[in-house]
Length: 401
Ligand SMILES: *Cc1c(COP(=O)(O)O)cnc(C)c1O
Image (cartoon, rainbow, N blue to C red):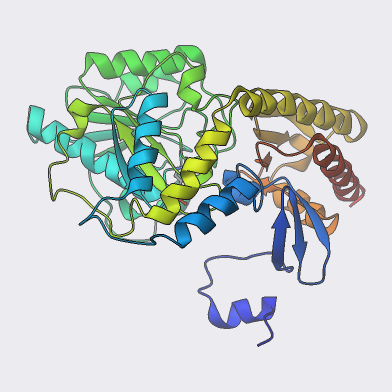
């Protein structure tokens, strides 16, 4: 069978609009398409491929587990899931782990847990969930409603109730909404999809204090910011605040679908037997791969490398901007960076992405005004230089029209 991009329009639901080329192979931070054209990968599968493509340790973990045991369901537990949960609890604030298959599912679990916890401890009046405008928490109906982008949540009829949105980095807007009726405040400790927006330390500390004051759970969605992305294992570790519930996915699997919700023993107690579940959650293949990812990422070699590579990106982007004057700033932390388009290029981030693909570079956007980079955490310095050279050619083409 001949597989072409045209086939996509014939057989796939029209909710995506992928590039014209079809990648068929990847190694490290390079990818090849059907025609053998090679690309530098600054997209990392949207902050997922934390160790690049086909990392030997991940391939070995997957191969080894694939010859032992693929699936059991949660009627039985399994060794990779228990090992991964033990490691996650050893290296974070958390004492209990719930496994899912995606970020949205981990968030769905976090929100359902928060609602149950509040109901159990305070009664049914404590059901309000506060999140933030521009926030993104996934595409299930509950999580997309909690996300702060009506463009994603409108158009599906009545929404889950008692969800409200404050303004990110604006503590007063949260103060105006929060009360004893608030069961949880959910936020990304670095907004990703919303445009790569870091929290101020005053804001993040203030959210923690307001949650404490009103007995509300603080939920950190670290689906994009977690697992080394910011140069810390989890972004909260660099912010001086500890959430009550943390969700992680994307880079945790490094390319194999997995999500997890982490919390304390006391809060987790509200998820009694039968209250929530997932057939594939905690799948042995996913957990075995994830364990290999965590072992490698949670080393000073990789985490310090992320901080050093961030500087290479910042220096390279500054040099490009000095020549072409297209960005107003470069935002973000570690290897989750956003080049913000200046006044002259408003609304045109997709033009830069399309021009980049033509120059054999994969990158991302975060809204209409931000070009986003979320490469492998171990992308070789030479690939950063080569990718930036290609990006410069793409920028030149956009500037020249
Ligand atoms: C990607 C993302 C999600 C959704 O994850 P899926 O695996 O696509 O369900 C949730 N929250 C944040 C912050 C994300 O970046």
